[in-house]
Length: 610
Ligand code: G6P
Image (cartoon, rainbow, N blue to C red; front, top):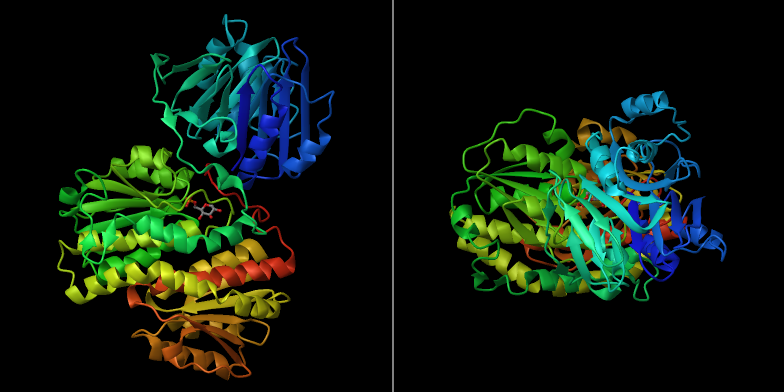
C-alpha cells in the first residue's frame, strides 16, 4: 500500500526522503508528497500526482529545504487520485501528517471536527488525523501528548507520522495495524514503513509494536506502549542486502527476481535439507515435538501466496497423509469455521503484513488451533512476530509487485513442511526420496528452465493483441495454472482465467476460439492422458494452444498447438519448475504491451488495508 519516510536531522533531509520514497514506490504509486521544516521554522509542502520522479522534479532550492521532514507515496483508498488528496495532509497551517492504513471512523471524526470549526478540504480519512491532533494541542503541553490522546479516538489501522510547524525538533509516530520502523543514525533519526527505505542511511532499526507511540528527535527516541508507559524496544541490525533496491543490470525488478530463483531457492534449502533428510529443528526450537502431533493443516493466505497454499494442499495430502484446507484470508476471517483436532494454522505471506492474513491469524488464535506457523519472507514482520513458529523463505527483498521468487521459495518451504509432517504420518520411502532428490536438483533445474527465455519471448508476440486467455492444469499443476493466469493479468492486463482442465466441459469450452489462447501446463505425470483428452477437446473447437510439457509427454507442435519443452524433473518439484516459464511468458507479453511491469496499474505490493 502506501509508503512512509520521515527524518529528523542536522542536514537537509529532502534527498533522503525522496530516495526513501523511490525505494518504497513499489508499495503504492498514484501520488507522492513531502513536507519539510527548517530550524528557522520555514515550512514547505510539495505534492504531485504520479510517480515519485514527478515529485522529485518539482523540488527546487526554495521548496526543498528542511532538517525535519515527512514524505509519502500513496495508493488511494479514500478519495480519488488528486494532488489535493495526496499526503502530507495539514491542519491549520500547523500540523502535517502522513498515514498508511484506514481510519474507519473518519466520518464520525469529520462531523465532530466540523462542529469544532474545522473545514474538511480533502476526501481522505487521513485529514481527520491532522485536525484531531491539532484540536488537542491546546489541552496538552506537547505534541506527544496530543497524539497520544488523538490515537485513542481512531478506529482502524494506521501507521502515521506527525510534524508540528512550531517545533522542528521532533516528529511523533504511532503504529496500530500498519508497520513502522525507526532507523537510528548518529545525530539523526528516521522513520519509515519499511526498512528498505532507510538502508542508504542506517542499518540499525527498531520495529515498533502494535499500539506504540514514539517521539523521535535528532538524538533521542522515546517509545511508549499502548498504555502510555515508556518501553525499550530491541535494536536490530539489518541483514537485508544493501543492493536489494538495485536492478543489477536487469531491465525490471521482476526479471531480476525471476532470474534470482535458482540462487534464492538454493539458499532457502541450504542447511535445512539434504539427501539424508530434513535437518532437525528447522521450524524452531520446540517445533519438532509440536509438528509430531499435527493431523490437519489449515492454510490461510492472499494472492500469489494463496496459490502456494493451494499447491501445498496436494502435497500434504498426497505425500504426508495430513488433511489440509486452504482458504483466502479475507473469506476465512469473516465466516465461522470448524477447527479439526490437532490442527496447525499456517499463514503464508511474502510481506508478513497483509491485513487480511494478519487478521485471520489473530482470529485463529481464539479458535483453538494447536499452533500457528507462518511461512514468510520478511523477518520482524507482524506475522513473524505474532505466530508461534516462523519459517523464513529467504527469497531476499522482492520489489516487483507481481510476486515471483517469493512464490517459488514458499513452495520449497512447503515441501520441507511436507517432509516434516510426513515423517510422523507414514510418508512412503518412495515419496520421501522423490522429494529429497527433487529438492537437491531443483536449483539446477530452475537454471535449465530459464534457458527457455528466448523461445518464450518469441511466442509472447502471439499474445500481445489478445484480450482473453485460458490456463489449464490438473492436480498440483492446477494452482500453478492459477498463478500463471494471475501473473498475466497483473502485468499485461490481459484477462486470464485458470481452470482445472477436468472442468473444461462445464463452461469454459464455450469460450474457445482462435482469439483465446489456451495455455496448458503438462508435466509427465499420472494425469497426462486425461490432460491430453482435454487438449483434444480444445483442438476440436478451433482453439490455439501453448503447451508447456515434459519432452516425454510426447506433445508435437502443429498449426494449432505450440509445444514448449520444459526440462524433465522429479514429480514433487514439477509445480516449482513449471512456474518459471509462465512467469517469463507474462513478463515478455507485458514488455511487448509496454505496461509498467514492476508497478502495474491499481496494484500494490503490500496490502496493509482490508
Ligand atoms: C498483493 C501483492 C501480491 C501478493 C499478495 C499477498 O496483492 O501484489 O503479489 O501475492 O498481496 O501478499 P503477501 O505479502 O501476503 O504474500
